[in-house]
Length: 312
Image (cartoon, rainbow, N blue to C red; front, side):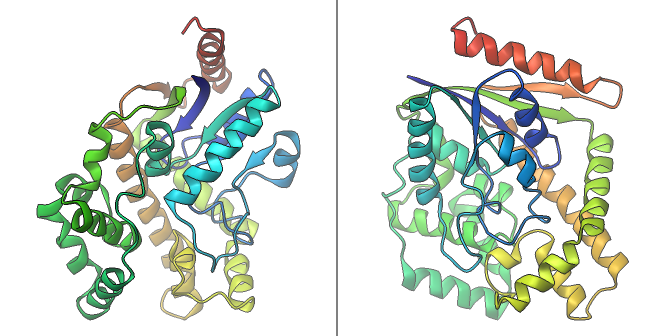
């Protein structure tokens, strides 16, 4: 089986930095498992690696789509699988890095994603329901059909909520049950995640949001609007972009916008932690303000070396 390294977990935990720092020791290439970093022109709000960082370490599935182009977990799986083959062909190590748990699960477990093909009529009906009665009404439909998805998916994540309902409608099974099927996988993964104390992670989130605004997050959203990307696009509903849209429309002050993004990022981190804590085989590395980053890096490097050498 092909050995791969996965760096996953909640937002703002240091996944990108860890992968870049491990690049000092291993011939690695990064495959982004982030549902927003695929979009061009959306750099600050998605916390993409900088051009300088990507010049040092080759990245895949970053800035490959315009914000109004379709994207799906099926396409992610197809492109990521191809990237893994190419990376291994160059003698390098594939590192899958990101916080979109469904992408990672679908890739590593080889789930049959075509057993419930898209149903445009059903999706249209669910979107119409959301417009009439709110996204909460669509989300509530999951409670009996797929309790786990109901717990882990936020009502505002309408696209994935509808997909979970669509899957149940087509197969009669909850989409969350696919992880229990233990399908064969062509990959032998080492899955690493960084765990911070909740207060420490909250501070990291606050600091990152402040940095994003200093770097020009508002100007980035303005530029997207000037390029013609509508605020109702799924990409423009992403974390931070939606809230800044409210600010630009005069619905929030700047301070209110920052506070809302910080709050919503904390909520996202909590949902991501819930998701990944239920996944099997993840090694959680403890981080804190008292632990030197180089110490954590050494732990990660030891685990990676053990895995690729067959001693793990």
